[in-house]
Amino acid sequence: MPEKLYRWFGRKEWPLVLILLAAAGALWAFVEIADDVVEQETGTVDKVLLRAMRSQTNPADPLGPRWLEEMMRDFTGLGGVGVLTLIVGAAVGYLYIMEKGRAALAVIFAVGGGVLLSTLAKTVIDRPRPDLVSHGSFVTSASFPSGHSMMAAVVYLTLAVMIARVRPRWRTKAYILLCAVLIALLVGVSRVYLGVHWPTDVLAGWTIGSGWALLCWGVTLWLQRRGEIEDDAD
Image 1 (cartoon, rainbow, N blue to C red):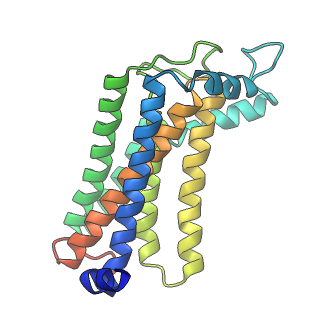
Image 2 (cartoon, rainbow, N blue to C red; image 1 turned 120 degrees about the vertical axis):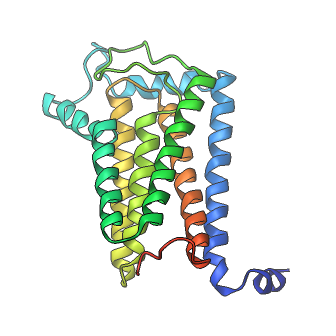
């Protein structure tokens, strides 16, 4: 069976297959988390983890000194609308200047699709924000999934993959991807630390964000091999 699959896909197609399988796994994990949230099976774990980041004597006070709280606000800003809009705008502008208009459109599609997915999920599930502790950041939308966590994963992973593909050394590729993952992780942790999301909101944001980024990467890679999108190395 493996030999038949190898002949069917060919050596160059295996990376694409693995990417799509990883995307499917991440999206499946999101569905499982969403189902548990809808069935209200995550309440106990969410409350324990959220309270663990707060003073036991004063739930309004996050753990750690004041500078740590301020640093967490800085981290959460990395997943905010303003910062991500600037980053995506700069990336799209760069690709356009480099005469890679279709690649720029692919980035816009990935980010725009992520926004639509986040908005749809928030509307359908309509989970209230945590009410156990005071919020350390202004919020207006529903809680599930974490939009900051999801869009941080979408934007930083998408751009990291584009940059890593044109780097010749594996160490460099791994470092770039690791930085993107680290930023997404910090954004998610900061949302729980500031009391504006349940932990499962953040976990769901990471899974659907990374799954969507991988899916878009796979589609883009397939279109590049068909010559319909400019290759990153061109």
